[in-house]
Length: 126
Image 1 (spheres, rainbow, N blue to C red):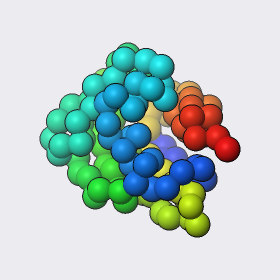
Image 2: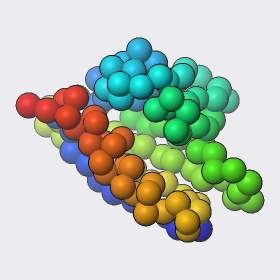
Image 3: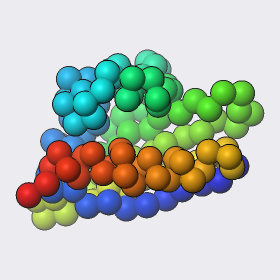
């Protein structure tokens, strides 16, 4: 199992980005794919037409999202923590993803950089 941590800067305020990460209709807009999301602890979610599935663990509005991502028969849960920081009209995002199966690590890192945050950066480009 491996862990991933990275910071991204997005051209929008934390409140708007938080909504984009937790509101189903907005997720569909920036991903272009089917999604299911409720900003309710304990609910299950899916992104990119079930490419990413898991459970919402906790929310701190406009600041923090904690989720468990499912990877089949894992003994340790894979936890994603997204922390939003105001950065003078932009948002600095800290992503921590723990317990990524070794065989999935390269694809997950590529997904975070090119697809997940790549799509968000494109959606909120200047």
